[in-house]
Length: 372
Image (cartoon, rainbow, N blue to C red; front, side):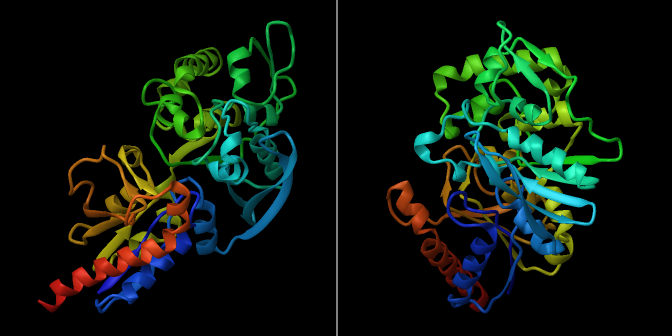
């Protein structure tokens, strides 16, 4: 049996490439006569750039930008000729921020704007940005500061490049802002289709996992809405602007970027359609499969691109209670790798062992059908 293994990363645990390799090893250890083919994917979140870079043979490069705590840090990007890709999670991802410092309104996103300016000055004409997996919720104000925009409160004090400033801003100065050349295309690889504001928006849907207190949801959501109502109202009605804590909205408003499906762009670039055509089974996966996954994340994107007649099975770190009944979106079965209750830290540490265990069990089960 030819099995195409196309998982996303398991956030804060294993990158997509390793997840695919470990699942393949589990199937090899099973009773099933199997030919596993690894095809790691990304949907715009953490690990997307690595997946695409491996497929296209891009060069990894670093440059200094402002980090989440205001300090200079090295930021990774990959490039080839006039093409460049980077993901914001490399600078402000959840995995980069210690749990006790996850205060999404205090972290700076200035470095994202700085990197865009740098890449354009280096002659890059096509820039892809993965915006998923951030630890911030600033609506994109911080990256605007990195592009040269300045924000002030009512007393005329210049504000920091963070989410707290979107609660305090009163005026904006655009004169020194970096102008994006007409021949430069900036494309946002989004991993969700959520709007910027409202109950399905960036704050209400993703704020809690980043450390934002629910008591602040309404205030922050309203502040972001008011900010864009005055500065770029059209982003308020566009799907996907809530990606990256509102970074997608900021990129569209201040960097003239265009939002595209992160998973579809990734699948196009790695030639997924050709690889899946001869598969007997497709394996998808991510750290947690939940209702948010239905908004355009990797497992659903892969399942939707899999031709009818080829079954899709999900192997995930955990399965949420808010999932629809199986089958859904071409996924016929879904398995959690969690063998018994444990602390989150321990589950993350045991992900490799549990992935092998689950894949081996699925392989053994499939071998019964094949032998029959």
